[in-house]
Image (cartoon, rainbow, N blue to C red):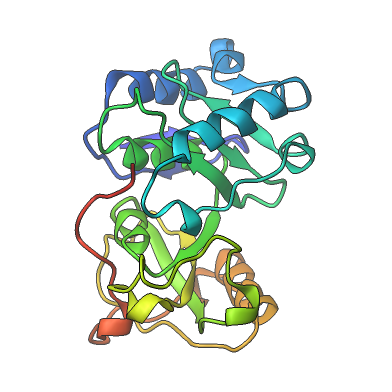
Length: 232
């Protein structure tokens, strides 16, 4: 299906099954006359967004892999909410962050939230190589760079035993760009050592589709995600 993004460009988005609340969000984003119903005032709602995300992630086995942005950061982003209380944020450069599904959101809602984020102007994101890359690839996010695990920069609440099945608790970080012609096929993902170098490759991929990795290389165990949808 196609949609018109916030810059007026016609785009393609990948269709996944979605619950009615997120379908409502997609409709509202695509409806210029009522787009304010999906987008909330970041300065006024940053604290509420933060508290709701903390509550949604409480008790989640793999919560440590998701960075919860502070209200001071959220207030500078564009924030979107569903009627069921889920949400996502988009930074000025198109980076999608702080995505969360509330307990009221139908299972699998993360797919539709990401589709909505793309419609709202989201272009890129990054994540630990757990089950998240599998989710992202299914909605058209192509991995373009990766960096190795580094204990120095591990999330403060990270428990390696909890994440043991993902590279022995030390997963790489993958960097993605949205590619409307990518459907999850295997790609060779360049490994760099520094975060900034990975972001540079990510931004290059956004500027020039020709710089995207080839889709003809066999996928290695380190490059694959986990098939199960454990997004909530």
